[in-house]
Image (cartoon, rainbow, N blue to C red):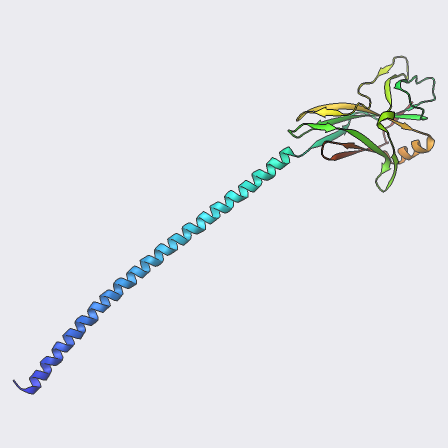
Length: 226
């Protein structure tokens, strides 16, 4: 065999060997690539599941916050005040009115207000006492009312039949959840100046409750005078 033939045979063998090696590494690279793609897919799935879990956790957290806020609102004091009839002014110096006092007051005029107090919360609430201003905030006159000096009236007469009064300045008032009670507020207006101040802008009553306070402004527009 000539040298030329030997060289050709060696070239063919080398080509076959390198071809086989190239094919082997090509298959191995392909397998590694496929495994990498599968790993990437699994990583994406894991990432999507993590995002979903995170979203679910956020929803749960938001729901927990909402429940906590609702619980706080339920436990929070929620008092409603309503003036249930027209205010009345009685002249304390009129023989016609015949005011029967349990605890006498010497003001020239007596202002009577009837107020419904409703506890809209589920917790019991105590209405401890009240304070009041003639007129609106910013243009008002504070009326100091000492608890010991609160007026108490049994009845008054403007015609023939005496009109009985109940729960006049009776404090403290205890209210269970969703309970309503009515109280008559009797306030002495010392003189004509106080009466005129009331006639101009009405009166503001502030009730001190268990943990806070609640205000109601009552217009003088429909006041009945005797």
